Image 1 (tube, rainbow, N blue to C red):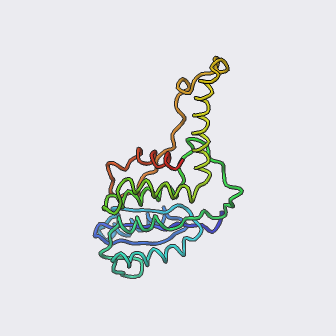
Image 2: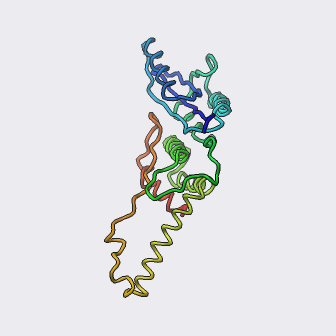
Image 3: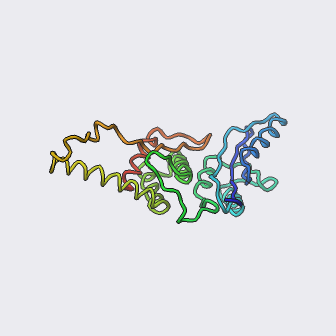
Length: 223
């Protein structure tokens, strides 16, 4: 999995927004924070991508997006007059292909095993766009559903299989209750572990109606 890296967006307390890339993004942001503090500033918002292959190309795309969104460049990667929320949402919409992971060797997803990084980025983008009034919560759910169908067939397969098993079991219990007399019902076993809902990036506005329930609806609609 060599050759991967990250892109990031950070906002300083004076309103300046910086975009960049790094193979060690956590350490890189710590360096920026230390430098900012030496000038009496601080980092007030940050967004980082998942590890991905085309991080260098994505940095160039991110700088172009920053200018398209009204940012005035200063020294290449620093921008004045740029909304952190808007550029973070735009960044989250870039493609993030994991480096060195061939499709046939992709790990099998397990119920409750966690949400993929790209879904966290898509949710963050949707929350920002809802808060900005660009989307309604229903439009966010529809977009997330489309993303899941297009980008993660394994997740769709898992959700469909779970739905089919649950309904098939309920139907068979009604048709042949004697065959299930000694087996506990699903309600007695307790619910299956839920898929955890990813969080938006630090500093991104939160939308009251676009929380875990919306994500669960999106996953259910995708199924």
